[in-house]
Amino acid sequence: LGVPQDYGEGARWLRLAADQGHTDAQYDLGNMYREGRGVTQDDAEAVRWYRLAADQGLAEAQYTLGVMHGDGEGVRQNQAEAMRWYRRAAEQGWAEAQIILGSMYDEGRGVVQNEEQATRWYRQAAEQGWSEAQFTLGGLYFAGRDIPRNEIEAVKWYHRAAAQGHTGALAWVRRAAEEGDVLAEVTLGDMYWNGRGVATDAGEAARWYRMAVERGDVEALRWMRLTAEEGSIAAQTHL
Image (tube, rainbow, N blue to C red; front, top):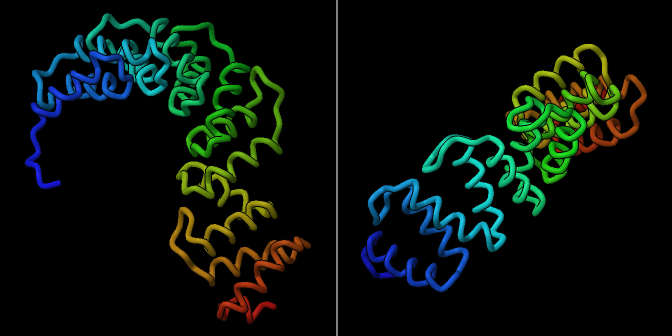
């Protein structure tokens, strides 16, 4: 806006707002201390400002405090304290906190291992569209160690992650499609048609749709007709 960038001046104005209790300013000031922008780098001071914002309910500050306690940045490393802050952020819907909370329950870090709780938190992040949570959730349902094995749920979440380009999920879906799984064939067709996780390729989309059509999938037939109407020679050939 015509003003030279000056992190020191920015920090000064942020402090004025932060001292008045504005949570966003407290969080941003914490970031500046953590990164050393406009102020001398100081993790302990960053923690102080994050805590002020977190105590007022700012989920992003709560999540960041979880990271700092977990990694020992500016405070003594304490997984139980990290868990407490992650939980507060997760309960407000912060997906990154939900994923880490899920992993802590899954691995027994700072808490007693509990796959049911891990599944609960992964699911909340997965439902917000986080592909890593979707892929991990699929793995939990497929393994069925402490929760009932559910291949339908596993496949559903693998497919959702693959549709977003998750490498591990994409490999799983491709392998399932090559083994004749009709849902995987349709998913791959959709991915090639829409360019999700792979380069757009109408011919490849038509090939996977055709395989699904040959197994009686009506939805795949509809998509195959659409690719043909859009000019796919492969789709036109096989209709």
